[in-house]
Image (cartoon, rainbow, N blue to C red; front, side):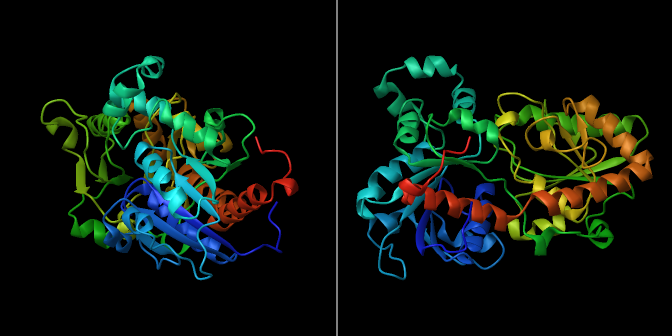
Length: 404
């Protein structure tokens, strides 16, 4: 448990991508919240340092490139190096950087690895091979074949064993942490000043020439792991409109993987695609929504993640439809959210149709979403959990049993 009598601490966060990644908003917010607890932070990224300007909100930490750290340019105000290096995922780009950075930064920093996805499932899925087969492959073949944006089937486990502790975005990910390691579950949240109780922006809808009907907003990129889920959402839109329930989808995000057959005209007829939108502009995108939908189903992908957009959905105070997985397991159906066994096209269409037709249900879900956010999601709470974990691994004799 966090104590008000803490020791000043230096933390280096390591991000696998630049500040346009969804994970960057988590690190940004946690680093800013840690500043209030006496922790000085630096956040390093592989490239594109100016992207920090896209995240929204003034950084209370020092943004750096990997190259800056390796060149010895990382120094905190007290003249020391980091007490803790917190790597945001064990993906290969981070692992290779850590191997080089540890000696450069003094070699005494404690190492914490953050898990926000089922790395094993994603690596196997994107490489088109079963995880057990990848683990049996030769180290030389894996070193040559595993891209930097995935976790190495062998070396990622070695990194996890080497780590002093781990953080997980959802408790189920504790299964991927070696036994005996201290673990802290840290949910993501949203910037309350930007997202809390955002009213529907009818003027912005008008500027985009949106029809005068129900609007669903979905901010998210499409990649191989979620292509089928996004296709389900587009299909649900087609079903709803065909059945006389006019709904428009506004989507922000990029397509890194094909997800519609042919040119997709049949599905895009009721969709407005905005492309990449900087995170600092996301409030105006979400402001156009009547409700939100998180497509997907329970399984190896969704059970081990916490959709980063979910806290922003809840904070705005709109009804949310989501599958019975990850955060939904802590929510009440028809109170905090509309929870379906599987958020496929049919279930999405049925849920949206009921919410649109039942104003009392829609109002209850909107109130429940705001209440859940206020009671369960907070960057300040997450920062206190992080500091408590850092203190435990820096002073092992004072640490209690590892949190499981």
